Length: 321
Image (cartoon, rainbow, N blue to C red; front, side, top):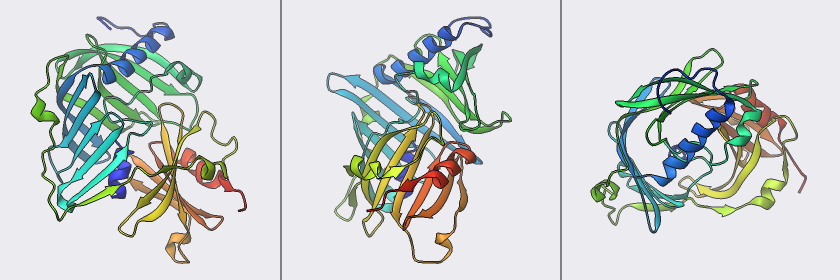
């Protein structure tokens, strides 16, 4: 279930434009942010994370009642995620489980950009790159280069005709690809077959439904202090969730700089054993850092450099209750 929560958490025309004014790049950022939420589209895309390559199908429709979107894995373990406006249903047939959650601050590809992009230039150098082709369509490259070591870089390819994000690449300090989404085929602005939005797997009586929406926990989050160890990141949500088979209660806080999200899960520390130690683990493109503080176990994860995660884990303190 936590894997699914993480997954949910998971989850310009012609020529060369190098050296163009930054406001032009921000214009394309605005187009990408708007197009993903306002256009109808359907297609398939590939997701690369570490050595894991996954194929997925997506369909997105905007109507009088808002947005409806369905995401389905095409290889590996079957999984589908159906979003109706702000509610998300993650269907896991192998586990006979449906998880109901709310939309987080970071949506799934291609809606990965914040609607307010103007503030990003404080921590990223934003520029235009070449025009190339993605999924058979002309695409304008927008490059976000971090100004410090607390965030990764981004390479974003926008559809020339519609502005829709066609390809997104997360890159490290040496230019290495950490994560990539890329459409293989895409239909934009056309009528979407209603069957692409329907839940594929029937839920039977022996399935379990888990409500992971949780409750707002701003008061609990206020007891935690981060200080100024992570410039540009701010707390954007705090939810008290029940996770695991035993329904263990966990505080989930999300920090964001607009592009990068860092999640902090807070739960009672285990008594002794290896879990009491601090350190890093890896899960594809997502790094995980854990530490005990004030009798609580902090698990910090996100698509951010180790230094950012370590600063969060080591820098957070909690007020005495």
